[in-house]
Length: 434
Image 1: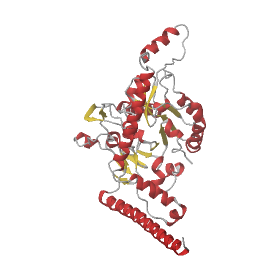
Image 2: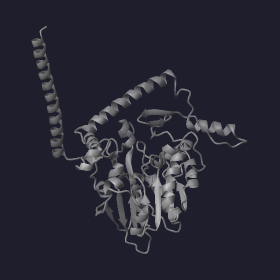
Image 3: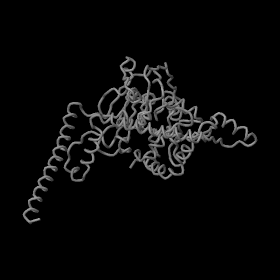
């Protein structure tokens, strides 16, 4: 082949590559433009029903963040979260994964005859009692945790969705690190801690009437005036306190949390009693159902109703209504499958929510908590003048600075502190105080 022919072919090749590159750039450009146009029409979504979390929104451009790479990361996260039909795509992908896991699980259970010879929890408990008539030992059951998807399990033949419990020994270092920060700021104050005792801190095969081992250990490292938690002494009691398909506690669990907390902090105060129990005509599929796309459980959404004194709420500095009780009372709630009724009814997750009961003769309270406290903040706050609820997962992003407990308490004349966390929030690093 002559030199002239080689050059001609090379030119054709380069021209073809250039056209391909141009076409690729054009497709990317059109995709980005389409994304922004669709977003302008639809608007940005703030929360994900499927994942039960706040969604990343398009960031404001900052030159310093662009050169550091933070802007690009935020933009990528926002585009992933705000993708058109993204919720449906994730839901279908999760549903497919759950169906695959379920079919494999079913086949394995049939091969190994799981369930045919398995004793019920009650029978195993009775066997244990009969074997230990003379010497009482810690009851140990042998119920299997059946995996569903995404770290969610069934406990034996129960339809309740749970997690496997964390190991205390493996988490002591993380608990110590967390406790160190809270001791630094609150050990000299009138401070209290309450453990929301979820399935991540309970091994249902060994749970009994004694105190939860995580609470015992936290009490030994946290220099607070009071340390306690939700007492769950059996799997049946757990089911009474928590939703079938959600990691959050239900109306009974959150109310028991309120009773425990006020009895610990203000033992002389009279507790508020429910005036009624209301069940709404909608099935509640919680976060565990949404993340696994398993919607087999049929649990109606039920709440307690209370007569509370008048109060105002401020959300991130502005006066606004926090809960949506009135929508449910007026039959204006969503019937969408997988809708987050817990968040919709009790209120969403914000960096700061302030309750003003206008009782100047009473103290001001600081609560540091995630979404578990959404269900009983108003009850706890009714025993105080002003109550400041801080969710450290959102504080820095909202106010663009770290939470300073000392300055915050001084500014707002806060004399009492309540920290309400699950073991997951203690160990995941999101509630560390610097």
